[in-house]
Amino acid sequence: MFRKVFDIKTNNRIEIKDITQGIQLIVEQSHYNNGIVIIYSRHSTSGIVINENEPGLLKDFKLALEGLIPYNGNYNHNCIDNNADSHIRSFFIGSSETIPFYKGKLDVGTWQSIFFVELDGPRSRKVTVTLIGQE
Ligand code: ZN
Image 1: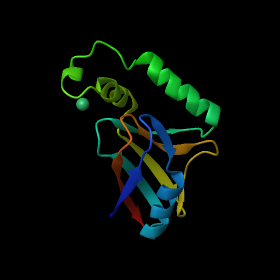
Image 2: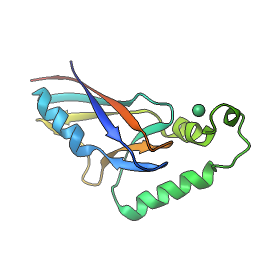
Image 3: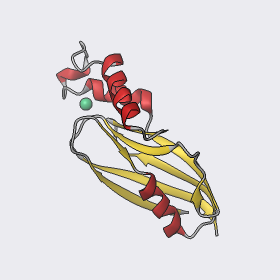
Image 4: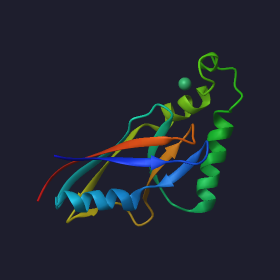
């Protein structure tokens, strides 16, 4: 097993950050050829997703999140720290992805990127990257 904690600094309340290259570098540092990599966000107001890095689509995704789960809903959790929308968006997005790698390269499709989704920024975040594989 190989493990690395990936630090992410976000600058906006909602931010969709492409972390594919950082994950690929960690795969290379592990010296494993084949296996799986688990990308896990240790936070309840963020997410990890795989999709296409096209600027218009990322804007659409942000707008969809805001439309489906509005900031100003009548939420119970808001009497605690006023970020229920961030938690609920995170419930739907999920906190991890598992991706295979083969011959030292992430085995993702041409149009697939790995994103960290900030839902309650700006903040400093930690993403745990765990590899199970063989040299
Ligand atoms: Zn909260």
